[in-house]
Length: 165
Ligand SMILES: [Zn+2]
Ligand SMILES: [Zn+2]
Ligand SMILES: [Zn+2]
Image 1 (cartoon, rainbow, N blue to C red):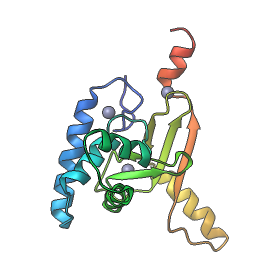
Image 2: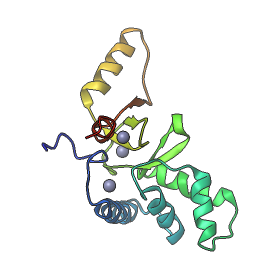
Image 3: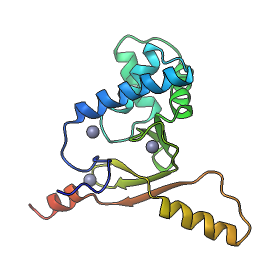
Image 4: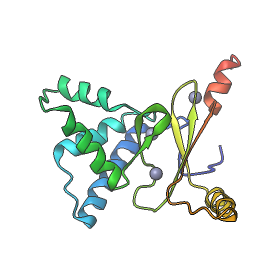
């Protein structure tokens, strides 16, 4: 299969590589920016990266509690805020859940393809889309400073499955 983008959330792959790469990148980025990636923040990031399905803060808290964490919920929210701030994860507004960023460190606005069937999310980073929005907004005198696009649909794997293939 031809690779159209570096985000392979919707194709079969060894997800362990995603997790390892995400954690390595996080360590590197935090060191560069002097952000304190504590063990707990790192564990939260790992839980967000558990799969390409976004996870909610509550599910993360539950998992941490199962591992013996007995801190208060705000601790988890602060860890998530830290990860968001450093561009390591994104918040999917429509799902009220978090997903790992496939290209942390690069400045990009969020464009997310959300599969309604398997719930997995892939990130697009198409500058044409951004430019088109910025241009149309400018035409009516509007300045864009934050844009997140969440697109619903069915991923290729789910399409194939639902056709009995
Ligand atoms: Zn993966
Ligand atoms: Zn991203
Ligand atoms: Zn799907």
